[in-house]
Length: 193
Image (cartoon, rainbow, N blue to C red; front, side):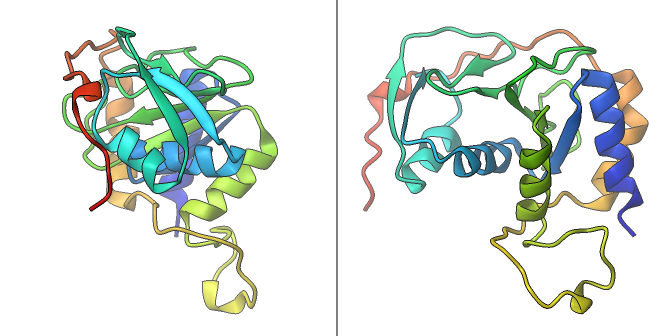
């Protein structure tokens, strides 16, 4: 049933050079899963990013500092091995030992809609994140109702239709890193109401 998802992940792995890929329903959820997995308490990252990034870290109770760092294609969450690679997708881009999060939304190198992914070389991270994004399920076990015990999980799986489109469009991807001028988020107050 999930052949399109597994094929999409496999093709992304071969394309990027990452040993493992976990497809998600967006880059922000890919980042969230990485931060949850690593139990990060603090990091520093560019003040010029999309609003969902600091909002997610606030929701996870992660302290952060926004820094004056201009980026093209991707940026790192300093003090971690997590990267927001939302505007980069090219052959062999994977950095060993890192967790790079991709976005396939509008204006990104591969435009599929609400789809993202995590690139990693950590087999255990792949196993855990794959289950977390799928409601705590191992998608290789069917029917899901036959499983009697589940761990933590979120409903962050991409649609099979989007995965199929990703397989078809990957060969045509624009491999040039994308630059966009986001506003300086240091001018925004992130207090909860």
